[in-house]
Length: 73
Length: 517
Image (tube, rainbow over all chains, first blue to last red; front, side, top):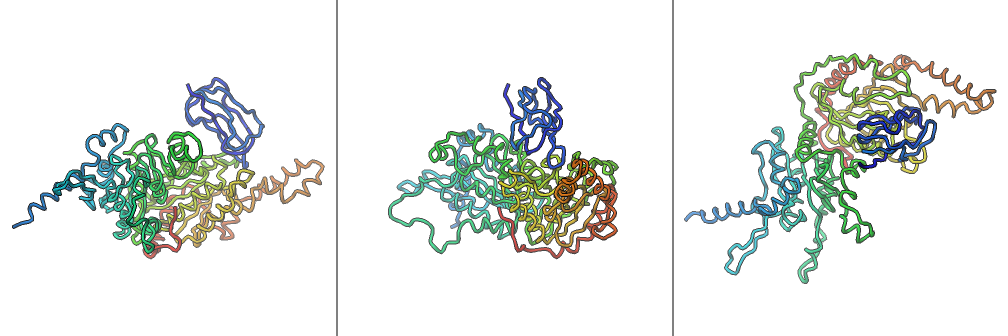
């Protein structure tokens, strides 16, 4: 099993976290939704796997390329 | 006395020149999961259409009696062939010989490929695999070094070709040095996912110069270059790469002197998709799938996206509308809210210049809140690349149709209108100098600050402005040609395609600003 980092592509705020530790996700499945530029921006799983860790919480600010979750894939 | 003896010898040499790196070299290539250059050419072209140029090129080695001891074929293969019945020029390194690094005749033929394509006005397809020059060839004492001062720079024809014929390159193995330069000097490039790398300098050079140990894949594999923008599309394997090249060429003319092809299609021009009526959410903060919009408007299965992972807020694609090839621009609000980032702007400019060069009409579906803002965006120099995109649109000479789908704010929006554009809007359009939310905070900051409850005041002002944001005044003021039911988009665009046919007849020849890498 490999650890896969999930990054935010954009600076913004965490709006909703849809998955938690232990949830399995398909590639492309939305893990959380950020709010940036007045839009809801989904953060998708780059590969299929299981959520090992969610590193941010709602209303928290994130930066471009910040790791926001870790997947076991 | 006939010339039979020489003719037989010629046949033998042609045969020898086709043996590539011999059985061992070919087996090694196959073991790497790759085809040889001759196999690639066969797969790319229509059956039996290859007409090689320089069939006997090689470096012969003779014994004292002038008998042929060894015959090393030129390691670059070039010639004409056909794709869907249209002539193209195709060339590529033979990696089974000397790792693709050019031998003497091979170098001559590789430089010839661009000349051939430009002279006969055919698209050029390069199938690249190999390194650049080697220091081994230099250092001979006596004799001449370098090129004569009056020689035309070798790179001129590479640059010139991009203004005359479609140039497509595929990375099908490690492509380093000069071949990497040729790869990007293209209108479209593709690389295989697992068997190709693109490198300015390979691992040995990098370790020597920088003391950094990295593999070829870490330096220049697919994961690096789809995001760097160096390569447009990823291919699952070589067959997929070659199929993508055939597809890309189907949208383009053979040269700037010809019109784009036009196809017979079964998709009715009056097809109206019900889903278009509700695809843009009424809540303007919620995103939607712009690619689904494209599928509903353009001819069935005709949308071919280019560079999806680079500058992802901007979609660039080729498609057909009632059989007429067009360039498609659209925004993906699920990335950067559709904003123009530095990368999206570079992708946009390059694509518009390609469309202009080959006189492809452009259809642009806008949902853009403006330039991307914030510290990363400023540091990336977004405004310069953005204005280059604006300039490319403003000086474009091909027909444009613009559909204001949703947002269109700020200076970045100027990049979406060429002179004479046919402008349509959906009822979901929102536009102005700034989005209401940010705009209110800036324009009314004193009023908001002075209010007993500033937040409530800001919300009140935003609501008032939002209510006033009706789509009708722009139609009434002739600020758009038509405000349309989104379901009418395909029929309206298909009619526009017929309107522009006389213009397309007269748009032939080179542009003032040819596409550059």
